Image 1 (cartoon, one colour):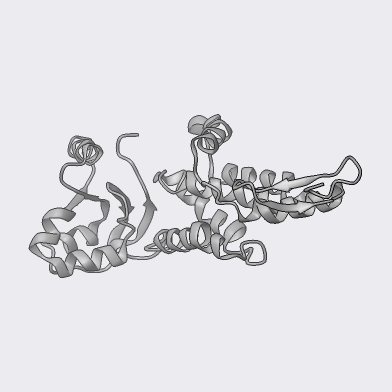
Image 2 (cartoon, helix red, strand yellow):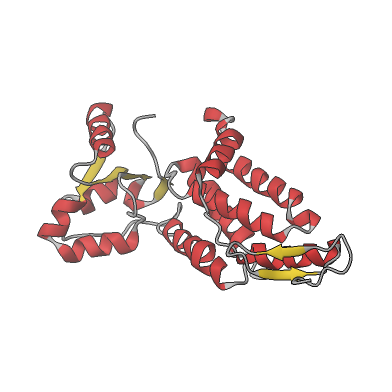
Length: 249
């Protein structure tokens, strides 16, 4: 009597707080209201389960992984989700892939991330169209896209007369190695550079920031130094050949 159940079955939909958000619905109405409610739920992008998923999908390639493998994975996810009308699952999986790629600062993953961001995130404004998308996915994609676009292959690194030895290195080319104090991986890369026999030029960003903040700021605005170490290979007159290189390989 309290709930007006005059015949059975009669469905009620409750939210997590126990509030009735739907009653007297058939299966179609239930599906529609569930879609609305689920789309409002906070989704934790980059969780352990999604990281494990992409580790299995992309990690299986091992050292044979190529940028196009990342794009093929994204395309497969699109076919299985958006291709079947499931926009929400498309967002979750492609957003998870973005979060998976962000910390993997190696040459292959970053090369794949460039086109992935353009094609599946920034190129789909009709899909990523709510405030939560902008906050959690689109904003991150824009920031990452900006960092990845800095000093692309084929451009030249700037002249820096304020940093001793920079312009001389720029004329001849080699490996440009940015690192920071107290970073174990940075120390390994520096040591690898020293014993490799390659021409290289190292920049301690901590020391430079303290001694010459203006030059440090110019480097931060020119290169993707969001994570260190950052190593790039240059040719004569500062022509960029490769980025996100590791001398430990």
